[in-house]
Image (tube, rainbow over all chains, first blue to last red; front, side, top):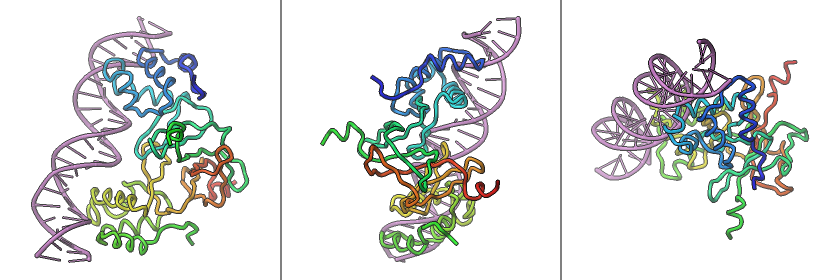
Length: 138
Length: 138
DNA sequence: CTATATGCAAAATTTTTGCATCGTT
DNA sequence: AACGATGCAAAAATTTTGCATATAG
């Protein structure tokens, strides 16, 4: 069961077609991988997962990630220095970086309240603490 | 007038010496630049500012930034994809990225309240909105 | 059939590393 | 004088680009 509200491959396929883009095997593989992952993969992770060279080349992975991001179908997450991570969950949400295992978890927007000088504001929060798994291993 | 509570070169010098590190010309130049900037410079910005090759080489800039960060004297800020920015303000604070001019402003911790499921938690917020300057230009 | 996407390989970035020399302490 | 820091240049690592071929619509 997926508690995160990630994009679905079907929805991404529909949006690509709407915009006149082809639904190719590489794009399908990359899209499925992104939608099934909650690990906020880097471009290199995606390339490794879809099989570097077989299903998609490096260039295609970068092209596809950029295309999906430009269409607002995925988004980038800045969590760790120098690494650009991708997230198929485009709903407003926050992140928690585990101080023990280093994993990056989604935090639903409903669980968080943020205000700037009392005003509501567009904000994205990066929490640091224990992820669910590490918290349950005392 | 500097409203931000950045580190001072004197304090950084003292900490370096405490840890047995030398206070050299390149480190002085890099430190002064970082302490006088509120623009959250990248490594390339630092290199350009201190004079690439003359005052400090590329390697020295990276070495110094890493050293200062390891000692907790500066910190990295993740604001824009693929870029690592540095901040001499190590006090707890947040950032605001201006949606008009793209600048990155510090936001004092006192101006913000954040909670995760009602709990206090270590959090760093990235706001998006109008910076002071852009807000005053209607 | 036409336009677009792909793969490969080369180029442009950005960061790291090795090593002889120089400068602080 | 000794140890650490610097600079240079070469090597990794990451992302972008050009172009011929393959594929979707």
